[in-house]
Length: 64
Image (tube, rainbow, N blue to C red; front, side):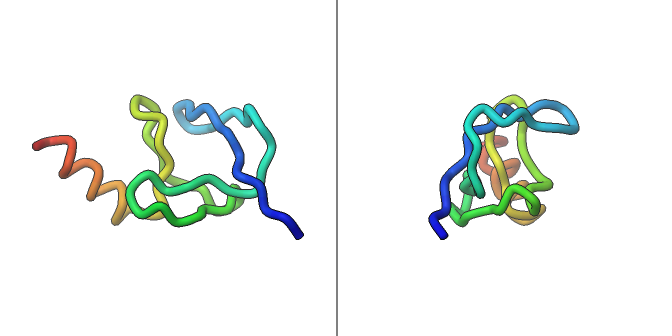
């Protein structure tokens, strides 16, 4: 089975699928996130995050 990267537009509390796919990449770790496991993203930066750990990392880096 071939996996395909999805293209999304992140909104508050939901996301729109621009291009169908199986996963997106975490903006911090670069790891694949299956769409069914995608729970964390930033609307302003239009980035996906694997977990709260990566969210915190991005937040800390943005404050610098």
